[in-house]
Image (cartoon, rainbow, N blue to C red; front, side, top):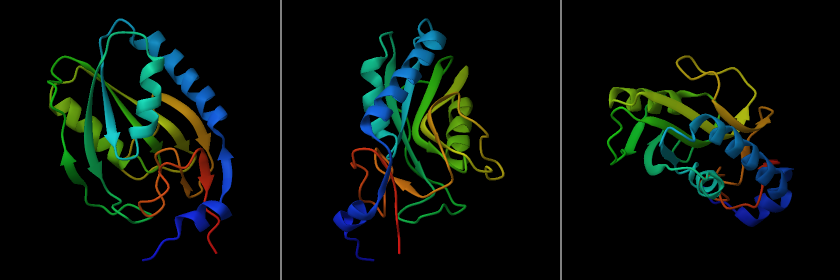
Length: 183
């Protein structure tokens, strides 16, 4: 499939600007500090989508923490997930007895986050929390998590890209959250 990313972006509608995202990140950071400042948590970036929210959230968190990442996907280059999870990388830090916060771009069906929570608990985490830039208002898939502990912005059930979310592997770097206006 050939993608003209510039054309997709030029036809897209911006749902949330960088200023709105910054405000949401500030709110998330405040809530996380209130709950986690004395926990010395491990913040776990769920890549690829979580990279941009994760990187922009970190400087806002002024308490001791460690960082690591995990890469699990159901989507590949598809618009919707399939049932098979693909584990690409697991954390290198020891999760035993630790509070872990999984940071991702979006809570959609909730399957990838549920699997990551299960992984962390199976590897000894004492508490596992989730933080998402976007929470898509829609029914979750069977076995998916219902809600995240920390949420930046709630959105309607639309196909979105930008700020970590991709459109066929492109446009993760779009400066805001956009809805694709596909013909």
